[in-house]
Image (tube, rainbow, N blue to C red; front, side, top):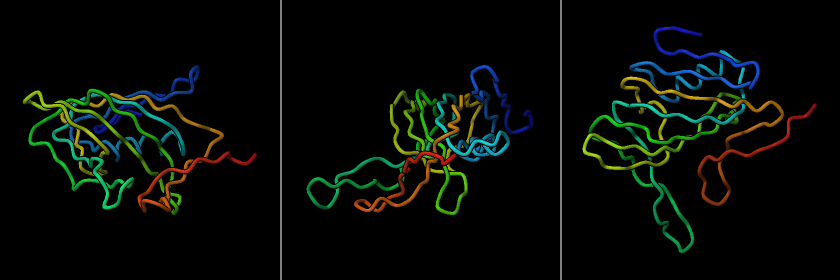
Amino acid sequence: MDNQRLQAFYDKTTERIVGRLKKDTDLFTGIKEVCEYFGVRAGQFQCLGSLKYATFLQVAKGDKEGLIKYSPKVQTTSEVEIISGVGFIGVNEQDQLDVHFHGTVVDCDKKLNGGHFIEGENITAITVEFIILPLKDVILTRKNDEIFNVPVFTFNQKEA
């Protein structure tokens, strides 16, 4: 697969997908497009590269002792490099591809930051290089957690 927005290839020996998102491609949209193309419904991925800006949530103290919540949206004010990023790929309750991604970035002022990235708000500046490790016998389904009421992946064995 090679087009104006992304480039990706399947390695038969390792059963992994490697590639890159090109300029102006959203991180989540690009990863989902690659997964659709190669038929990946569950997996893990890692990436590094540059974004025009990063948009994410961070963990914050909850209203009650022992509970946590997410901060309001944080967006960097300059381009960033993804120093480290890891995510899971699964489906939501409507059986549509879903991505959960956390990353660490450094901005143009050398400030480190990061957290839980938001779909549609992390656009590639130059390139984001990735590797996807597909899972064939496991189902990841994203649904709301009963305690925190935030979407989390649940893991189940795929039936034969």
